Image (cartoon, rainbow, N blue to C red):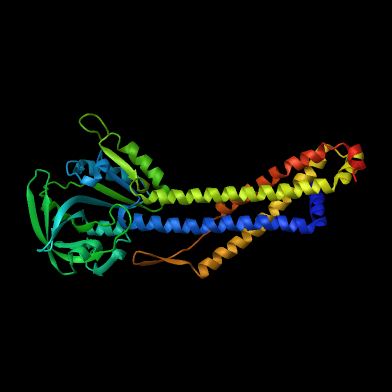
Length: 414
């Protein structure tokens, strides 16, 4: 095998211009694919992080049917304290959970004493919410969270609402909410901060202290309607969801149905579709790379067979087995693919480092985000494997043709 590859390398060197051009096309395809994967992966990770680390968390647990009715923010589907304890016991069995935050979400009327509008609110435990949503405080465009994410008697409100109602930090406002029994209750609050909007559900919600939320809704028991979970790594999400699904299967409704539902962030945010589109673009780019390699290698192999017909006839005439002749041409294709992948991977790593030294930046709301593309060994090996495999496959047909060539006809070829 080594001798065959050595002869293949000598044949490529004989036609070095054509070999260089073919390898150059493979290098170009490799660089385009790997750099695109690095940049698009960085963009996707940043966008997912902005949503999961400021609003949703990685996994959420709700009462059965709550997510289907989420737009109405139903209070009749709250999780009881016993349900919450069951979830927390299941989470204690996992070592990949970083933080868990309970929420009480509801709708209310918001008034500045002159105008009234509706608002979505999250009753939160400030310390736990800050631990589970580390980017939430970064969305603050006015006000302060130095003494706590949200203090009792105070509100964090979305920027769109603040502009529309002409409300500023320190202003006194009124919240009026209807509880599960239909009774109405109102309370005054002071605006502690204003949050910028983020795309997706929860991006325009307000926040208040959990005790204030329960007082406003006249809830005596420590009920909630959402548990948001932050993991140490998003890659653990499927495993955590599967574990929770098994552990919570015993928590049932009076009808014997599972009482709790577990959802990943991708089931709760429309941005998940954009993330899937980015993954689909990666696939299309890889398909284009396959096309480039296939056409380039097949073209050079067909030309090599055509130009060396008499040489092939001579090899056959002196007794060279058809398998050896076929191996010579397949070896040339593999060497072309191997050379292209080595140079392409090296150039891609250099370009990715350049993009990290002089990063590409873009605005996401009021935040200035820098792309930090990275290429992992798995990405490089996967693309390299595809290129080498396709190069070998592309050279099979010309190699098969050369191996089956009649030596007498080949030696007569002019």
